[in-house]
Amino acid sequence: PNRNRAAGYAKGDFVMYVDSDDVLFDYTIEKYVSYLDDFPSLNFIIYCDAKELGEIPKMMESGEIILSHFFKKSYLQSGPGGMFIRKDFFDSIGRIPEKYGPANDTYFNIKAASKSNVLINPMVPLYYRIHDNQESNNHFSYIYNNYRFNRDVISDLILPLTPGQKKIILKK
Image 1 (tube, rainbow, N blue to C red):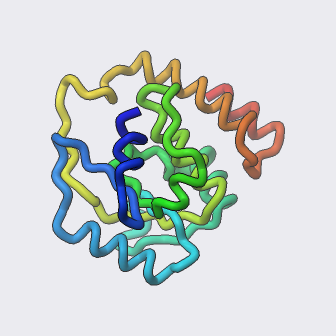
Image 2 (cartoon, rainbow, N blue to C red):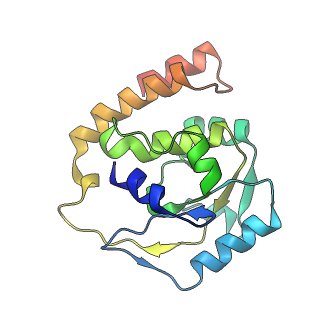
Image 3 (cartoon, rainbow, N blue to C red):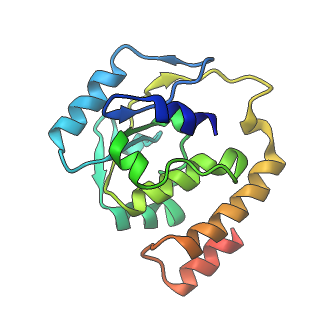
């Protein structure tokens, strides 16, 4: 809820989250804005540790990234600090859900990718502090909520998946 509230206060053209214990690199915002300037129809950039890309971002069409995410590499499994999105697009797709605990981010990323091409950015956007009390250490919550959000992704979103692929996703 706090992420959505903060986005509601934003007056600029873009949304990116930097949590209080993280540090944004000097180059991040400038790079991301330049990518969006280079691709005016692009709405969404996501960080992914994609060594196969080297240092070059890769544009992926909506259907391509959805299939790749579920069956090759989890490109869309990034926290809010790895996302840079046009604010009007963020608002138009309903913002971040609030019912999947630590899996809210990935559900949102899949939803955004289902409605837009995505630029995969291999450049680390911020220093992400790792500590014992962070939500990502709640493994039970991830297992429980990942099943719930995958079930809802399959039933609620229009995705380029066959019935067989949907069954595979639910069994993961």
